[in-house]
Image 1 (tube, one colour):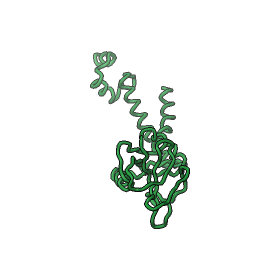
Image 2 (cartoon, one colour):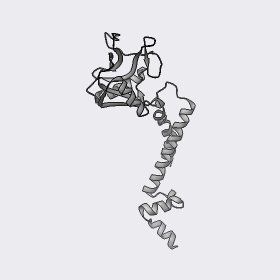
Image 3 (cartoon, one colour):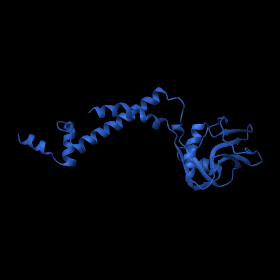
Image 4 (tube, one colour):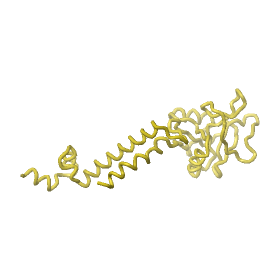
Length: 201
């Protein structure tokens, strides 16, 4: 039981990263213009990826080997102020431009990531490329808030509780002997010898 106690203590903290982690989705078998890609992502409850830190860039790079094309992210030139903006309206404060970029020629106002070195380029927004979406509600932050940590703890405890119940049933441990799980164990795994003896006596 000491092992289970250790699991209960440690595993919930592992799930904090799941709660606060990035949720990038690379559409590597679909091509679209930048505007179409934005619409597709939003239709799925996502946004075109916002890569605004080195942490995000590192996570994006892990997906790059899965595509043979360049792919769109959510950075574009806002025609209202002539500055680079993300689709949520925030301004550019981190970049990973390739040498010679960004280019601000007419019509070259959207950003793509190269599939061979993960560097950024500006491109014509009508080009048809793969694209990367992101779940904005699971954006990585350098700060884990109290509420985020609590969510991770409760998620972890729920998983641990489920594992303990399954272990109890599969291994037919004493914890199943005089509880509701005994009935479940009988249904799923048959009556144990010790239970038969108890019923006879």
